[in-house]
Length: 314
Image (cartoon, rainbow, N blue to C red; front, side, top):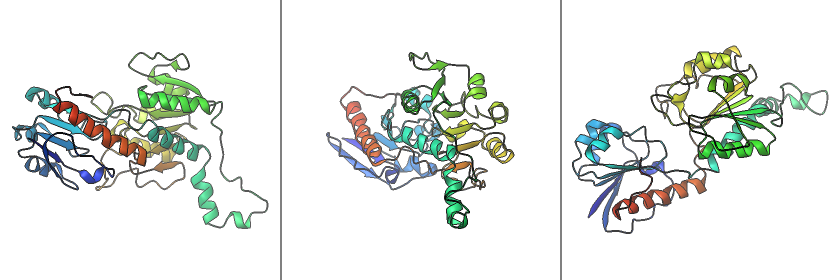
């Protein structure tokens, strides 16, 4: 009988159905990395969303046969150690094709139209004493006619491109994989950064992508450009971004992710208090529909593994 342990059940506020095979299930609201191995003792299937499982942990778990990641990103798992042990790692794919792109454009529209600044003006009483019917204190720009640069062109990047075109934006893409889409132009990353009005990141975090956007890349962008990151915090050098926003090097940024989450030790982006920066707490993926789809796919992956035909293997 399989022993299933979910290390951070509270990270997925959705209904998780019981797998269809005989099993014993144990879950914890949350776990630290230091607690993971002890809590997984005897488990054949581990479920983790954000609790890291490193090589040292995996070495202590002789019964472990599968790690079901309750997310798309697998940087929390030592994949090499799993392959060496023959442990199957499966993730969740394409569950948030509505939620993440919609959040992405929520950030874009709020920044282009200076919603935070205008909302603050109303709260401060500026509209109430205005000499005319409206305020013009902050610039407002349309999306139509501007250039949307998408870095990474998987399923999410493609959906963002589709929405961008619906707004009348020209879409350009930088991707390491071939792009079979006649409606977009492909550019080297350096050229995309220099020419796009809005840049949206849709890449996994790994050794090749970590800090791919740093001080030099930010300096190459248009002074009016927006940088949107709903992917992974480590893609961008946060100190460099904070400096660029303070100096007016770029027009603004909208982030849903940070390098360390939650940011218990602080973060340079938390210290920014200016209307051209919006930070949300990693909730782009978290619409009710997306979370339920994720929960259903999580159990699908586990059942497929037990049936001998694993799916979404990393």
